[in-house]
Image 1 (cartoon, rainbow, N blue to C red):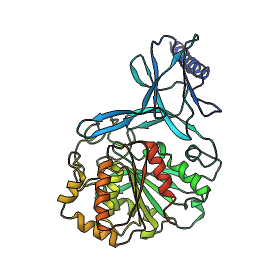
Image 2: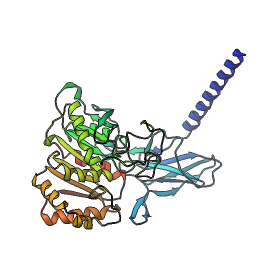
Image 3: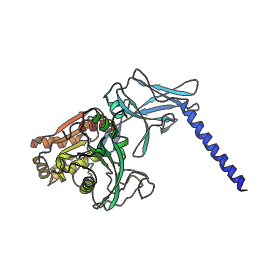
Image 4: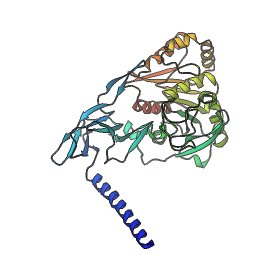
Amino acid sequence: MKRIIIMMALAAVNCLGATAQEKLFNSASVQSPVVNPDGTVTFNLFAPKAVKVEVTGDFLPTRTVEIPGRGTYDAPGVAALTEGPDGVWTYTTGKLAPELYSYTFNIDGMTGVKDPANIYVNRDIVSFSNIFIVSEQKGDRGDLYRVNEVPHGNLSKVWYNSPTLKMQRRMTIYTPPGYDKGGKYPVLYLLHGAGGDENAWSELGRAAQILDNLIAMGKAKPMIVVMPNGNPNCQAAPGEWSFGMYTPGFGNSGTGPTAPAVATIPVSFMDIVNYVDANYRTIKKREGRAVCGLSMGGGHTFAISLTYPTTFDYYGLFSAGLHLGKDFKGNQPFAEQIKNDPDFAQQSARLFASKPKLYWMGMGKTDFLYQSTVDLRDYWDSKGYKYEYVETDGGHIWRNWRIYLTMFAQKIFK
C-alpha cells in the first residue's frame, strides 16, 4: 500500500512538471512584446478561441476618467489587436520614445489579463501589469531605468522599531556602490504614494537602477536611499507582515487593519531618521539629508518640511497630495486650507528663514492634484519664498515620478 501511495505521488509530481513544461514551451512559442529596430513594439497573444482582444497601456493616448468630487485623471489608452489565421492576436504601436512602459490585455470583457509570454510584472497596489523598456541610446530614460553593466548598490529590507507608532515596521534601504569600503554618506528619504508600500519605489519607481546609473555617469552623488512604508497603521507590504494576508488599499479601502494609527508619518518620521543614523554611516547633519515623495508621500514631505525645518536641506514634492493637519480635506480647495490654518504662515516663514538649499516641486499638466500646487505656489510667490518648479506632460503617473526622481537626485548633495 505504501509503495502504491509513493508511486501515485511521483506520478502527480511528474504531471505537474509536465504541465509546467508545457506552459513554458507554449509561452515561448509566442514572443511578446517585441521591441522592433524602428522603435515600434509588437504585442502577440495566442488566444484562438477569443472573440475580442485589446491591449491597454501607458504608451497609448490616454483616456480621461472622472473621480466624483475630485476632478479627472488620465487613464491608459486602449487599442484593438487583430487575429491572424494561427490564432495569434497582434498589435504594433507607432514609434515609442525611450521609457519604461506597462500594459495588460483585455480578453472578451475580462480586463487586466497579464501577457503569458512576458515574465516581467509589477504590482501597483492591487493591480498587476506587464512592463517593457524602450531605449535608443546611452543615458536616455529607458537606459536609466534598466540594469546596466555598472557598479551596483544593494537593496535591503530592514525592520526597525518605531516608538511613536508603537510597532515594528519595515523599510527598503539602498546603499550605493562602494558603501562597504567605508566613509560617510548623505541620505535621501524617498516616500511612496497612497496605497503603496516600502516596495513601490524599488520596483515601480526603479530607484536602484536610476541611482546606479546616475552615480556611474557622475551625475549624482553616491547616497543612501531610504524607502519607508508610509502607512502609519501598517508594518510592511502585503503578505510580509504579522497581520495576515490582506488586500492593500488607501485608508479603509483595503482589508488590512482599520484601527486608526496612533500618530501620523510626519510626526513619527524622526524614528526612521534616528534608526538610519544609528545603524548606517550617515552624514548626521542637515546638509546630509534630503526628503522627497510622490502624491501622499509628497504631502508627507510637505508636512515634514513644516515640522522639521532645520533637519533636512533638500525637499522634493512630486505630484504632491497637499493638505494641512492630520485629515486630508479632499473637497476643500488648498487655498482655503492655507487661509484658514492659523499656523501655516508662521511655519512657512520659519522654513524659508532657515534657508534650505533646495525646495523642488514637480507636477504633471493634467494631474488631478494640479490646482493645490498652484495654490501653494501662489501663496509662496506672494511672500517671495524661493523654490524650483518643473511641469511635465501627463498626469498622476509613475512615468512622471521616475522623471522627477531622476531630476531631483541630480540636484541634491552638490
